[in-house]
Image 1 (cartoon, protein in one colour):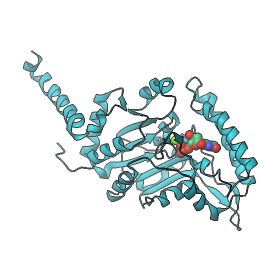
Image 2 (cartoon, rainbow, N blue to C red):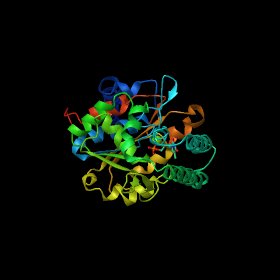
Image 3 (cartoon, rainbow, N blue to C red):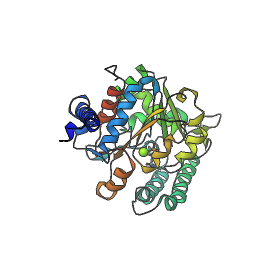
Image 4 (cartoon, rainbow, N blue to C red):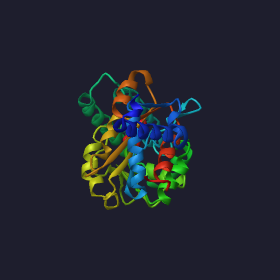
Length: 317
Ligand code: TMP
Ligand code: MG
């Protein structure tokens, strides 16, 4: 019956057409069993609207560790940028043990769904501060970082090459916003040959003395739950991000959701969250917080498919 009422007829047909287009043919990756969405209709409308606006209106903001890098490979955890520094080339056995104790103490707190962000905040500052102090004591050598990255077994997610290359080809700025170690992060993307000119990085950068030994970390400490401050103080000032009101945001922590807080006058923000660990305990909060949740998905297939759709020059009506 409703198909006979003209004012309902058109929206129903439009919604059906969009749904059919995105999930059945245009973006079949959204039907993968690893994909969860709270409001499929809103996701589809946002992607459609971003596609109509085109590549020139888009910017991508992404977390690094466990978002652009894999969480695990062959049953083993892939090292984060901090953990890449756990290499006898750079630090002593004693320091290694201390870093591992800190990781085993604080990482469970970082991902604990029963604690509030307010409760976690001072503990994250404590973790990062202790780790950075230990690293400084080791006087890590700048000239050995590349070798440590090379030996680390770090891996970007499957599909990373298409992800980085497409963004570069389309001149879409990619802001990597990481609470990891910026110098190590740069080396990882350089060794994977995807450190293209459209990439900007906000992270914790090392400060080396004239002999090339670590003496401090530069600027404001970035940890998982203060990315909003970094977004407002750094990202808001990046010239190449201005005039791009559509944002694709990728993260693996709820703290990553604030990475776009520096984008003024945004039109559409589509958030994708990788749920790598403690899936059952965290599923509900992730579904309530990210537009798209990817459960134990070690690939960039979904972000790549969305980017391919948004940057395609098909019928924009
Ligand atoms: P991200 O912002 O790029 O994801 O980096 C932050 C991650 O780094 C966070 O999830 C915890 C992790 N981390 C370690 O693995 N080891 C450490 O020593 C510290 C301080 C953080
Ligand atoms: Mg992360």
